[in-house]
Length: 454
Image (tube, rainbow, N blue to C red; front, side, top):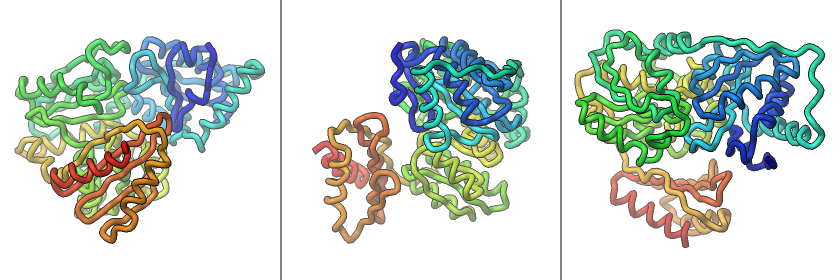
């Protein structure tokens, strides 16, 4: 194996093909580097159900222990379960998962104590530099006194903590279909839902990191097909799909129609504001629907707009003391969960909101779905900078629009907006457009695509 760490250490995590791009030897070096970067006396480590995850996780743990760090291994877990452990134990953490990527991939999501994010500017760049040096020069000398490896069960405590944050004991009985995609939702949903007035219809709960039924990426509509059929067939009240590491949740209504993650963000924001006395800051990234800041203001809160990406959301959550944050990619962040993202807690909020009234989910979310959106459209381009400049030239002299550069380029008018931002890892431009109605959205979307692909 020849490791190219520039392709492996991404903006927010470590991610690559096993064993082509990385293996257990490199995982051990990452463990040693994480020990040095954090300076921690102890860390917590967990992993998902991918075939390579147990070996990589153990190698990382041993690498950290060789540097004198005590390692608590929590074994199979979802990413938000690892964040729970990091928060509850006040330890830096490492989660071995490649989230929704295909089976041949694996990765590491890292956090400091209290589930604080680790990104390029907060430790990942140092991690890469140390691992690169040690690949060339050999592993560092072990500490005079190695750390210990111990196991700890956290699943039931994690489930109890989530249930303490959302009261579902008095909701009407609901029937819910859950598609775990053979990912970690099959591990975490049963204990979280235990004892609640819910009839659970499980789909693909068997833990299998080869993903035999479909990829565990609900952002791709192809992976929601089975759930969308099953919900009306079962006469269920709703369906929920989790990605591979179960930190994101996607919702479909009683008809099998997908509910926009922006609508879920608005719904949960309204509930969290009510729970906090009608005040508080709510974070949303710049590609969420305009519905979100409108609902936040209507419910007494203060919306705050950020760039796309969990490290930006979490940093702004900490800076502002925000009570909640949401992304259109279906990541949901909670102050009461150490500012970390947890799809499971968002799912409990949806269940509580639906079960607290008599109407169907489609009617409940209609008030939170006010605009027509394009979804994210990716275009391969040879010159990202040149295409963005062409968009700016096309719109900058129009009196009815404003432009801003918070993340890529956002062009906005009274009745519509679109954002174009470059991928960090591929020669792509990503377009998201929204307007007051479908016809306007299509017109604006097609105008932007013509420039992007021109």
